[in-house]
Amino acid sequence: MIKVEILICTINKGVVRIPDNLIAPREDVSYVISYQYTDERYLELIPQELLERKDVKFQKIKGRGLSANRNRALAVATGDIVLFADDDARFSAEGFDVIRSTFESNPDIDVAFFQASTYTGRPLKNYPDSVVDYPNNLNMEISALEMACKRTSIQNRIHFDERFGLGCDCLTCGEQDIWLITAERLGLKMRYFPKKIVETSTMLKQRMIYIDPGVQRSFGAIAWYRNGRHAYVYCFKYALRAARSRMAHFLPMFRQMLRGIHYIRHNSSVS
Image 1 (cartoon, rainbow, N blue to C red):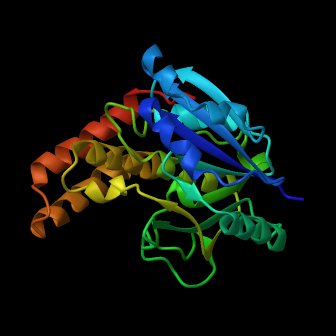
Image 2 (cartoon, one colour; image 1 turned 180 degrees about the vertical axis):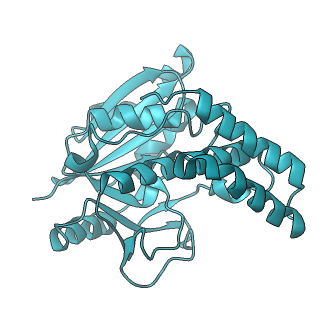
């Protein structure tokens, strides 16, 4: 029997939301909760029921940084299939059944992408209606929440780049993009399936590219990671298009993209 493990990362007050999002215990599902805290007073908020559930592995880490938190959660994972989630992710028994049956029917894949919705059932994105291999024909941004992975395909092979993501001062998003580029370079077999597995309340930060300097810096850094020195031209053209369409001012956006390129060039990845 394939066992599914959810790696839930949270920080400070977010831990109180988790119990309501877990389903009743079942033999084929377990959880790793990786709890970051910035002050000891937040430890008093840990719900006792999380510590008492036999299907939950709970670990505490002082500090911040979503990518670092995900890496620590993956390091202790033991399930056959692992998923990355935040404290607002709401899974269901039906969603877990979809994940298990997908990998049983597609034993050749390393990573499967699915659909997510808001709590009210609204799709998080405009999802394709058919099965699509990634990256060849899938024109869609991928979020970690939509992703299920064979643990043995990624553990000790791919980490989330800790220069990127929530909790980082410079590159405030983009960790998923770097992860996917690395997975492609390693030759992992990835495929999208038009089935919903989870609900969330999270807004997609990448959509703030026109107004958020951290997202703009992350865009530049991702472009460098993917394209090397061609990133300068790529970012120039993107900022110029944004200015022409009156979505953003050219110079402020381009400067932030250049800052992101400079940052990734002069700060080594950590894991």
